[in-house]
Image (cartoon, rainbow, N blue to C red):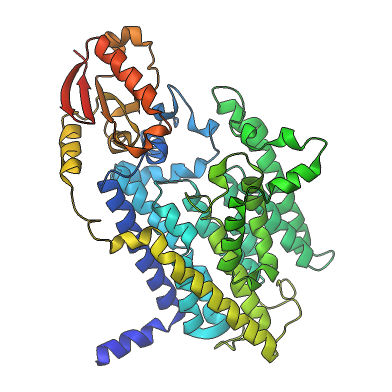
Length: 498
């Protein structure tokens, strides 16, 4: 019993509590992500793509990704050179699992600054609540279960930057924010908002004000440079592929149409409502909530319906910002009297007039209750539930047959594969998507085409990026050229070049 009491006492220390929660969620994320890969639920888009890129970095090559197309330079798709920092780790431990574990650790790091800040404000109970809300937040949990993406680097950087802003540490906030321009091209706009907040709150004529102004300009310039110059220079088509999804042409001469697109169709209401509820609604009163505006703006203005909802990985970057806004609102309200004064309170903080009266305290506690309710309700709806789901750790007969089929393909072979099977092969073969025309032309396939063709026609992801009709058409063409079936197990097909 005394051991348990000692452990509970140690958990009340801010460092132990914050890093302990981060470690716990890193383990949970890892279990979910690795188990999904074991069950062949990961995909070429995007795990396979990023593994091919990091594998190229680890071998000292440019990140050319066959899954996107022959000779496709991935820095022409999105600007994420920070991915190269994973290359040394991948060189020592090659394989998709390395990337999944690295993403789990990076995402979990967001817990540390937010829970430490909450501890300074309201003690260990508030720190535990904020840490759990961050780790179990729907956007982060969905992202760690949705393959691997570059925004894994953005989540902890945003958490540290927002916390530094809330604590009144503008230099630290800027230093944490600046690397975001190397994570993804649109995050330069978030860096600009960080600079603007630093600038607005700093005394007139101070060096901090100049720092904020310079940071804002740098963020805007970085976004413009990457979208207009860097990405087109690497892109095979000489353009930024995602301009067409922004719907900019529809808004020319009609700005009210762009404003209307922010809130229509109604699917966008769910995203906005769930984001606001994650911050306990009251958190939207914090200036830190403005950091969410760039990400929400491009998502809601885009023509791609995947950006409008609460699935995939797109909301992960919002989670640390919304929860930082909630913590900042708690601090400003005076609802908690923490064990020590917030050391960041001062001329550069985001502090406004405090409302330490009883009504403000009650509003703040209701906001925390709302945020806690959101965490409790969404937890069983998002992938952490798989840790306790019946059958989630089983190996089905079909999964076993799929593994046996893939085991026939030797390391180093050239392969054309369907989406989910390609994710299993990206680390040990040269794999492209089966639905695409190979290079050189298919007429030369007997000499230079893929050595193996492997598909799962029951893969639910065969609709994207490869329609089932395209996959079947290419299968027929390969067989017409003499590729013979090595495995024909219902929907599982393995062809070998003669």
